[in-house]
Image 1 (cartoon, helix red, strand yellow):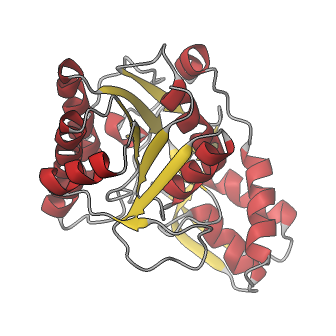
Image 2 (image 1 turned 30 degrees about the vertical axis):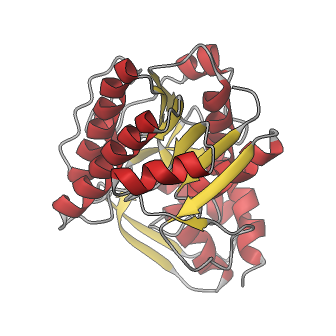
Length: 304
């Protein structure tokens, strides 16, 4: 697909917003939508109100706006949300995907880029992860992503192609959910100490939202990666105390204390192999973590 009208769900969110910008820069007519009816102050465009629920209204919207492809970034956006409300997480993510795929089938939309997550793999300890690694999540968020991927597979035989993207921990200045990087930087810029009751020695992989958006554009256009899933990461794992050190080197006023132990909102995910995305999508991460931290410091400094 080269050019054309692309619907972006969850366009006010971290990934959705950047995907709209990247698609437009690549020459696509992006149609941003979001469940929010009021435009957040940190967005650069207005999105059409659209709830990802109900096959008929979704189908009508897709037909009326002559949508040719969909980037599905809406939904509950992390394991830290809805921990005590599994039905909400599953009905929102898996139920929304089901309605969207049926609506796409009825409206003859031929390509969906599905934003899944590395959380679908679940706890893997130190075992390296490629796309053949079984999806073993047991929490509601990870299972909701597995369900969405299975729905995508079922609709492949009904004329709806899918490219699945599985990013690891996505970060960027607009992230609103819990983010250790943003917390450390924001506290340091405000002269406040940061204290985490976990994190030292806990490994995590990151990927900048700009790189995720570039993968989205590649997934919309590819002819090689259809009906496949792709890991997205920046190529290196860091312990969270190493991340704290990177922040402290750049902001000497930072006062970061971190106890040992795992993040209660995360699991240990082994090193992620991103070679499949390079081979099929011609995608490589362009922003490593030190550079991403530099950029976040600049962006967040403007908000202080």
